[in-house]
Length: 182
Image (tube, rainbow, N blue to C red; front, side, top):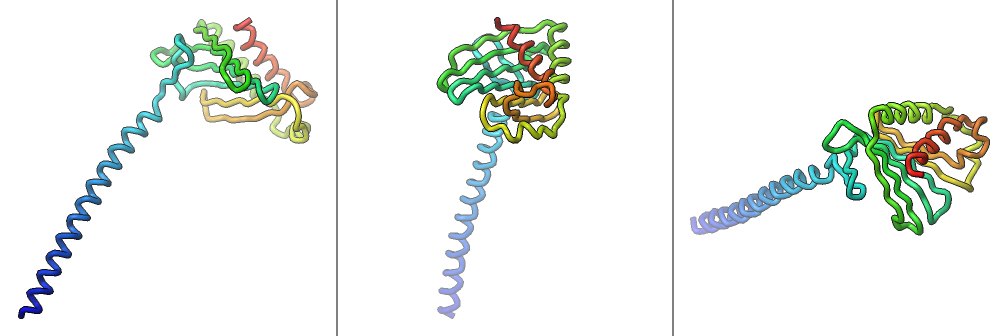
């Protein structure tokens, strides 16, 4: 009988120890879930600030990045304003991987429609760019968009054999955006 009591007492201690660890594990899981929810809602925030005058929604934007060299690049961003149904256009210039210029402006409804038309024309090019795959030198252009659906395209030197490769509207699109900041 003594042996049985000892075994029973040992099992109770073991069970209590296991229950304590289980309880601690359950609490840690709850804390982890709460922190995950807090941080995921923080990181999925729809509002991003570009400079002081143009906060925009990250789920409806078009970004065109032009990298003429390794150290310099230009970024044009067309995005819906965070607290409005209006859109803004921003220009960011990087020199030696540091921001050197930021300019933003709110677009009129007419300009928004022009921009969307120019964007749709710009992305209407053939996807079988055989020349672009062989070009490893020159400018790199990246179109990253979430305006209508997710789109990410990288194009190498679109100003080479532009008409043959179908990039005339893409160059016009970049010129249209650049004209707002001259």
